[in-house]
Length: 156
Image 1: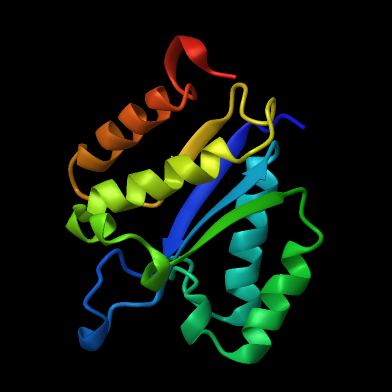
Image 2: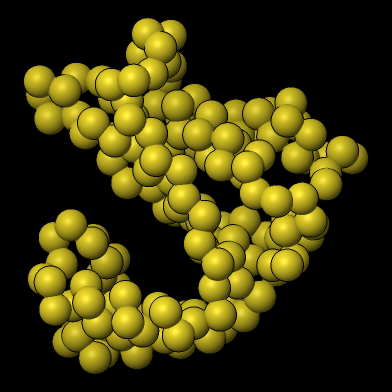
């Protein structure tokens, strides 16, 4: 299926200072839909239903269990497809430790996008959570997507 929108977010840190609190896993997730308005309306309704501010970003790990269950139950009724890439940073080659945070992030976003079945991304608008204040991450991501044939004239 071809989707009009893909909304992305990440969980975990890009760093490798495990003794100082860096997470073992880095996760990139894309939620795909052709009906973004329905998703936005449902998120607003969920904020109201759970009694939280509409400006609050849902943080799954710190959300109470009953709220997580409500979130999952309501998400299952939405017109979405979800694609995720889980990275166990302990198992990565040492070269990854030299990457800057935006390089690490864009590398794995590009890897996730490269694993999505052909045809699903034809004219999809991708919307990512802000990862850095400048254009460094988006520039690096476009470069990586070009190398994979997913950006520019070679898009599938």
